Length: 291
Length: 285
Image (cartoon, rainbow over all chains, first blue to last red; front, side):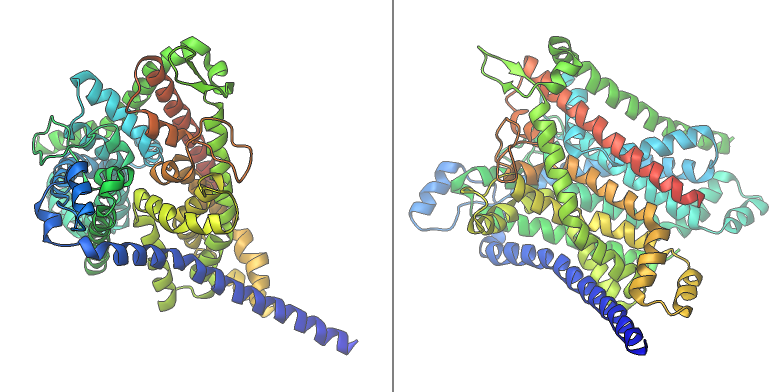
């Protein structure tokens, strides 16, 4: 009887230990891919990660092939992609930040209203929408009626992606602020507008800004919606209504062109550096301006 | 006066979301009408034939619907043990510790890597391994895409599950410990059942992500327009066929592709709705 009891205890303890080891093991394995991917991108990308990458536009397939045959490094960079990403993402930030902020404020201040519930539900719906479908929508809204692919259409697609993220982070941040902040401001005779701009937004700055940074980092690497909207271009383009390239679009081009394959990894490295930098800044901001 | 204007501005901003949603549905529906009119909605969805040659032009979505569901559910299956382990690691075993914040920030970074970089990694690094394993000769296909998709959705499933697991009240767990339960028994009988609906919702949302993933799948699935016959076969998903063929499409083909986009939108919206309902159940407890 007593021996049975100890073996049963042993069995339970053994099972407990096994589960613990398995949890640790599988968690460890889940972290591997990140290091694999980083190693891949860094070890293959650093060779072509030079000044040329930032100062020259993408070479033609022919030039690249000739250079390869002569054993030279690839004659060009991704300047057109860098400027395109700045243009497209920059416009998307312009479109989405204020709109997202206002919608977030509305949702945080009108809890329980019917419209707020509907808007909140639709925000979730937008957030779950696949990026390729958003590309189709920007195509139908902008590219088709205006008769051509453009940086603007790309920004509209990215705006639809960023908007729900900014709305959510603003709303969550404002909801976490103590109601006393707002009440104190109002009690002192401050107008609602002043309370929002002088008290709520400054006190929630950390959370709101972090949300914006994360939204930017998420759309930075989006390829699918831009394929249907901005299309890509071999030259530096700053015109809003012209086809424009972007770093992820160039990676896709390089992937499909064996002559340009050498540029794949250095462009991916640049993209990852920018995205991780944004994530890192977001983390610091969130810690520094904790609500 | 200023306040009134400001409140109107806020109200108008909220209305923009309604307009966006209406515009999205109008854009998708009005441009898929041509394809649905040609084949009928049911006929379009259940037809596995996709033949863009102008002489025998015929479009149906079934191959891509099957391909999408196949890869996404397989990816979900592959990701469960890892995402679950990470969630338990961060939300239970090492809750609030330094090592947990390290693990969660590493896993969260996985969510930041762009789809196209996953595609490149899958193509140049994972594909040779798949070929080595003898899954198929080229490496492309359902299996390769599902493996990479599984890695992509781990952070989505694990971070939300962690949140729900760490919300389980300590009192409940302490009660079980005081009765002599081991840690595993607490997890099995207290933590997981209490957080169950949240954890399930997290995995449903991760499934939604997998359904809509585009670039990585487009680069890895092999892009054949027929119903995949098994793990080793190639195929196409709804997202990947749009990404692949949208550029050169016009007329009926363009409309058929947009109709596929509409179907994908409906499927992901339904998935999100289900996740929301499951989570609501949690809120009531």
